[in-house]
Length: 297
Image (cartoon, rainbow, N blue to C red; front, side, top):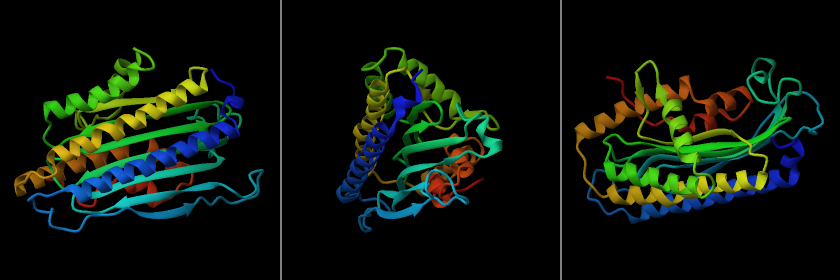
């Protein structure tokens, strides 16, 4: 396990800068999809969407050795003709965990101070034939330090080739670092993105990892970067495959029901949602993952 000094200011700045770069690259790729759609489908004649960015600062009462700086982030949201709502958020925050939360975080029981930075992506397409997608990568520092993240796909109508290519991209990323990563993190994803009250998985999976600390910061950071790059490479390609296809009202209604499962998971079980709300994050940014329209039958 790495010491806290392995996660010092230099590495913090390096990680935060990478998350910003990935944000910029993903936003550009998704805007290119908006420009490239031809249809005809129910939304293709609309205007191409562009990301709108909103900066926020994290407020925390009281004086401390942070000098009143508790960080913040930038929320980037696109509403267009391919993506009904696509969010790509970055944040870097610091402070102290509440007493009720610190026992649940490694290294925070005796010293509640923390630093956390990451990028979070949730995409709700207009078309029910284009899969919903999620990806995030993060670095967290307490008296310990680690990386976490992953990506998963939630198609309304699963297509075997799409699922294979999505998993293939993550398997390639994992295999470049450790042959055990993909089977381990795939299994973790399947178990994590499961709705016990429904008895079903949220989608067709991907990978999920947390508390990654091999003792080599550079190695763990390189893997986390490849997780982000894998999503950047594969997801826009899946979008382009299906974004011009027409769809029916029945398919749209099925999409709205599927989105309901997404809402249920994120509000009941998602660690990132709980972490953000428990650490004084921006509520609008945290709930960016929720779709703009949903239906429960």
